Amino acid sequence: MKGTAVESRPDDVGSRRGSGHHPADAHPVRTCVGCRRRDRQSHVMRVVARPMDGQIVAVIDERRRLSGRGAWLHPDPACMDTAIKRRAFSRAFRGPVDTAQLAVDFQAYLGRLNRGPDSPPSSLKAGQHPHGNPMRTQR
Ligand SMILES: [Zn+2]
Image 1: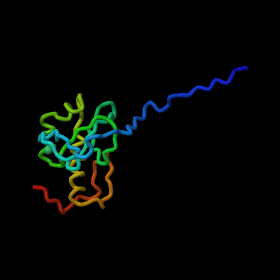
Image 2: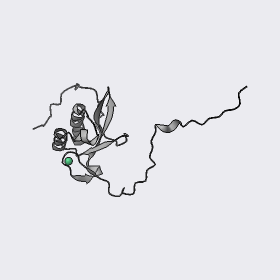
Image 3: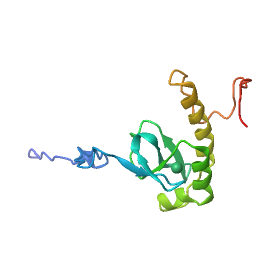
């Protein structure tokens, strides 16, 4: 007969919930990887690198709740353009990062910013628009 071997398993190894101490929370300032300027955290968007299909893909972390290394970028096409040209994301994430999807998401993100928060969230993988937007003012 076996004795009562009660083992406590450290099951929660993977979940890092930093019940964080943030002493500098009063002025959260981040550096944009595009223009390299520092700005209020609320003025820049967070980008994180996520493993997807065997590669690392940069995605916008709109809710700022994804774990992992983050990069910060102004919601400005010029900053995005500069960041991609400089490979700033690969540098920020310490490795090659695919930014193709990020560029697509970024356009959608800007569209939502301009339209307000009442538009439904679009799925990240849908490459097709149900109907084109005739009111497009890009130029
Ligand atoms: Zn910037």
